[in-house]
Amino acid sequence: MIGPIVNSDRSCNGDVFSISLPVRISSVEDGRLALMSYLEPFALDDRVINRIEVVLEELLSNVVRHAEGADKLSIEAECADHAVRLAIEDNGVAFNPLVASEPEPFADLENATLGRLGIPLIRRLSQSVSYDRIGPVNRVSAVITAG
Image 1 (cartoon, rainbow, N blue to C red):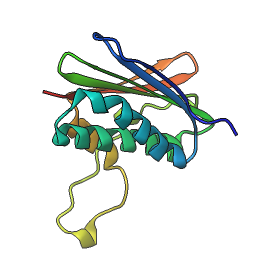
Image 2 (spheres, rainbow, N blue to C red):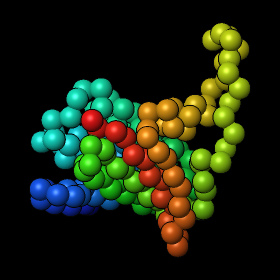
Image 3 (cartoon, helix red, strand yellow):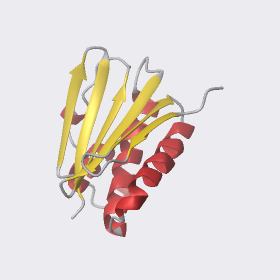
Image 4 (tube, rainbow, N blue to C red):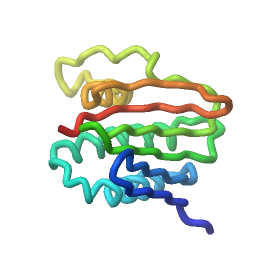
């Protein structure tokens, strides 16, 4: 079995991180650990790291659980200009998760419905979120303010 492919260029400007992973549940944690290792030298505030982890885990778990036909996913990240830019790509069927309607707010836990809360959460934790279809690839990008 081939492990994750990691590329990390730690130059002073525009440090770029990328990793390719198989589409399986263990890739969520593998990707998180690899990204945290890349971000460690930047000494980001714990609150920023928490936001990055939540956004990353939501995006990765969406691919793992819902990307029809996907067998590859990748994470790209860049820490620059007081922000962390994340991009998650998969080779599944074209799907823009950002066009889904937000669930109705619930008054109490008894009436809450499961699911559909990840994208609204990602939007709240990010400065911006976007979707692009680039050839056969879905790409969801998020920018998280780091300063």
